[in-house]
Image 1 (spheres, rainbow, N blue to C red):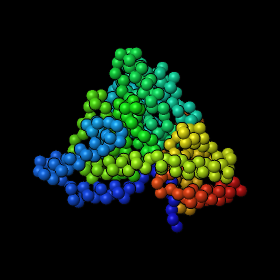
Image 2: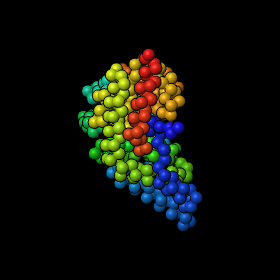
Image 3: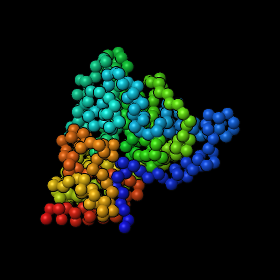
Image 4: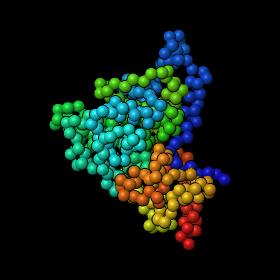
Length: 359
């Protein structure tokens, strides 16, 4: 039985081209980048080239790129640097930010968009950092980052103080990332969400805004791999965004034909204008979502009830924040290997499961 993977928001498979690139720096050009001999210098140049490649894609400078062990560490570096300061986050940030701070939480509406007026009122002269996720990992809502950046800049000017703006962009695989146009001072990326290596993250830090230091030998294979993964994703982005968006819309239409009472959680009923094309969260009436996911798994369909980062939580704080029912909600997320046939088969299986449940 061919299994259908619909959990790309949780983890993406490593692109074969990325694996090949990583192997090159694991078994051939493997020297320590800090070494003085020629192969070490070559390895150091590979790290610098990776930084340049990433910087070119996000429109930054190579010296503004920091490599970490993943998105969580990147977020922790940022929040840890301001642990004893006054900061603002949204109510639906990634768990690595929510759990590591006692920040002021800005509420969101039923679509998951933050309340910009509430944000304006919350910024005081004591605030030093605002951190708002670009694409939410559970409902896929895209926040108006440029508008938020403008609010932060205006507040800093008004209070004649320094307020930094950070965004977690780990799920922004289908968005163009231009840090200057976005107006962000810091940005988090994760290799495991972009068909790159696990355990490899990227933190963009604008020149002069903050100091972050990481010790240890550079993970050259993963550094080369994540740079290539980002480059491949950037080249495929527009075409894949359209293709996956069409699959998502087809899936939504199919679900609502099965049961018109199935509700799309967040983003104006899953609108591809307001949400990332690869994430869809739905509430299915009268189901136990964990049992439903296990039923799908038995039929070869892999999806999730919530973010894997919330495995110890009884309910999703993201869904609670938008007024959705955690107990009946399921997240489907699509990727490069997802086909129209996969969606058709999944809809057919869901129809059978629900038919048995409702009868």
